[in-house]
Image 1 (tube, rainbow, N blue to C red):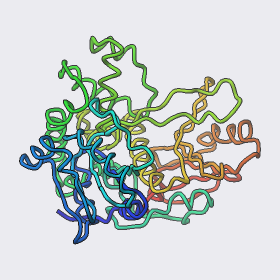
Image 2 (image 1 turned 120 degrees about the horizontal axis):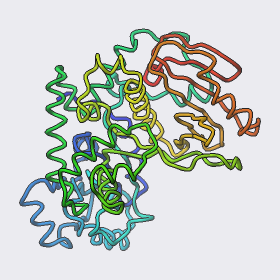
Image 3 (image 1 turned 45 degrees about the vertical axis):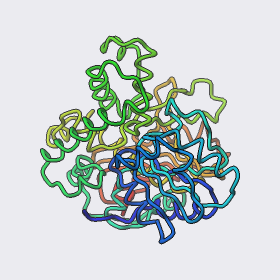
Length: 410
C-alpha cells in the first residue's frame, strides 16, 4: 500500500517533546498504526494489542506491562485494554519525562465505560482523519491562510463537478486508494462497517438491537449536513430517546459521525443553538446509502449533501492542525444559514457556503452579507466565501468571493 505523508505527523512529533502521553485517535483504517510506526525510533517499543498474546499480557499484568524506563512505548489500540490507563497515569505522575507513551485508539478513550481515570494535564490528543485530497497529492495545507487573507489563485483547473464527485465517492480511507471500481469500494465499506460493529462496538456500548443500529447508521448518513431531529428517528426505529442517544454517542465515539457546534457569539436572540451532524467519510456515507454517482449528480438535495460533507471533511482536517482555528456553523430562526464559520484566535472570521454546481449568483451571498452587516457590524474581520465546482475565483462584493472547491487542496 502506498504510504501518504500525513499532515498530523509533525503534530505528533512536537507533542512527544513536551507531553508525557500522546494519543492518536481516529476511526479504524485511517492510518494510525502506520503513523505511529513511522514516528518510532530505535529506543521505542511497539506493543500492538491486536495480537492475542500481547493483549493477554496487558490484561493479566497491566502494572508490569506499562513499565517503560527509556524511549517511547507505543501501545496500539489502547481501547482493548483500558485497564492500562490508570497504570500509565501512575507512572507519569511519578516520572515527568515527555514522550513516555504514544497510544493509538479506534475509539475515543474518554467514552469507554471502564475508564474512570483521567489523563488530563498529562496527555495530548491528536485526531487522525481519513486522507484529505491534499495529503493524497502530497501538498501542504494552505486554504485557511489564503481564506483569511482573501487571496486565492485566479484559476484552478482540472476539477469540475464530475471530478470532485469522483473524489467524494472514493472517500479517504488509505486502503480504498487501491480500489478503482465503485462496487469494490462499496464492498470494502460494508465489510469495514460489519467488522467495526462486531469488534469495536462492544468496547464502548451495550448494544442489544443490532438491526436498529445498522438502520440508524443509514439514517445518520442521510442526515449528514442537516440538523438532526431525534424524535422521528426514535419512532422509526422503535427506540427510546435514551437508547437512541447512547447508540448515536457510540457511533460518534468510533468517529463515524461528528457534530459541528453553532456559532453563538452574538446577542441576536434568534440565533439557532443546535449542532449539525456530518458523516466523517463521504465514500463510506455513499456506500451506506447505496448511492450511484450519476444519479446523485442529477439530484439537487443529494448532490448538495455529498458536496457539503466532502468540504466539511477537508476543512476539519486543516483546522485540526492548529489550535488557532475553530469550526462552527450558523443558522437563525429566519432561515438564514451559513454552512461553516471558521474563527481564528484573533476573532477574525471566514464564512463558507458550499454549492455543488458551477454557477454562482448574488443570491448565494445574501446570508453572509446579512451576517456581516447585522451580526459582525464591522467589529471584526469577515471574509465570505462560496465554494463551487467552477474554476475561477470571482469577486461579488467587498470581502465576498466565489472560490473553486479545489482551492481546499490546490
